[in-house]
Length: 408
Image 1 (cartoon, one colour):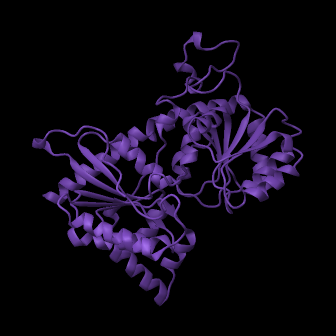
Image 2 (tube, one colour):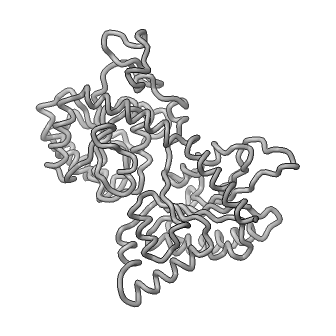
Image 3 (cartoon, helix red, strand yellow):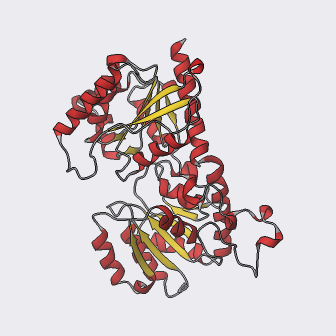
């Protein structure tokens, strides 16, 4: 199924807008890539008309299916050979040993009738797959050759962190084709503006404060923030169990704080059991998967966003939390060091075990005023650089400039 074009009115026929085709999971499927493409479609200017070409599972369908893959490849080939061939193709793969071959074949098929420009943005990045690609011996050599062939027709290959760019250079891609980029958060989640209580002190007028309390932003009540928020998938490597243990150690010293574990996944039952056995069990809640207004309220109530992941790209939940005015306590992995400024918008965990998380949390919770200031700085940074309208404007320039360069 192809989503309808962006609802913005295109210019007249004398200046036909650029046709953009974005490969992505269906809009109804949960996940960062589907949301990323949705934000692009919403924010495009009339100079570019975008369409989502949905691939993979649809709502109600089961797991892996070779017939579904074949269906998607045939639909894609027909789309490229049709009368309205896209000017720009934007593919959004994950460096994963299962997903990468599937996505690479779309890039190969694109050579049937090549668009003027092909953009590839890697969203997920599995360290194990990277090690296999860079491994010595014949297996690694074959994998590297396949990767280079798949990406040969791409005008720009984008990744979310500098180490991933370096890995692609080691694979033999030309430096001028590989760049770091960022993901984004949807400003509509917060009413399209920076919450009032996250404005820097020099941007607050005197009448905005009453009795020393922060004024309410959209969707939150006035008052000091005392929530610690984890918002991610409940899977191995995210550090959820370690965070629950660390919070239990600190609860007696900081009884006014609550821990919210938002999300879902295969480890949900195990993490709930850990929380039920914790000394802080009455101060830990599990709202499940959240979205829309419920998600915005949780984010806007958070003083501190904690994500002790072993690996990440550039998590959208981190950008959303910063945009809502939460300081960040995170591991310096993937693209996170590009976003978080230690001492200004948050802090990095030296170790992601329970003891390391507890030590870092203790330091931050002991100075909530300092953390509030970090949250205000985080919000301004996020809205200036990572709000969807800002990021899509940069992407749109890339689409237009790359397509124009190929035309010459």
